[in-house]
Length: 171
Image (cartoon, rainbow, N blue to C red):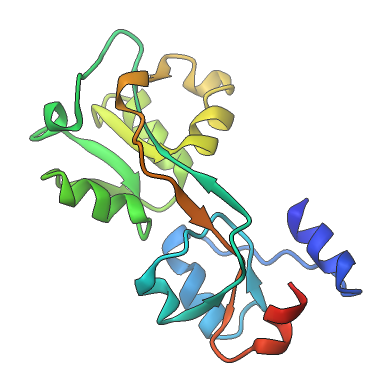
């Protein structure tokens, strides 16, 4: 819906391009497979060397999701355990900084399915993903561990190719 609204406000036609995995978003943009990435891409210094970002459109925190009944008091409690997260996400670096080697997956559904199937002990996902996905019956046995909600807020922006100031100014 946000993409449609942005396109309409610019007098452009909206066309959604399916990119198979999150890690492929920036390469797809840089290869001109799309004009912009409007899909939960956190603004980071590293990414800003590859793409140009709009002003932040929203902010989010990371949540830890575990099977109902499982828990942990801190991220440190997850060291040595299987923690699933999204490949190419800021979450990978955040977990590594906490001394956790994450198991990465291409989609958020794969991340949560790894926990639901007991292939992993926990998932480290952004709060909107947790809130939205956990309403699905597929994940009825999973829950957010409130004590592990991360305090840092990461901001999302629309990404365009470096140098495409005309498009960026319209967004």
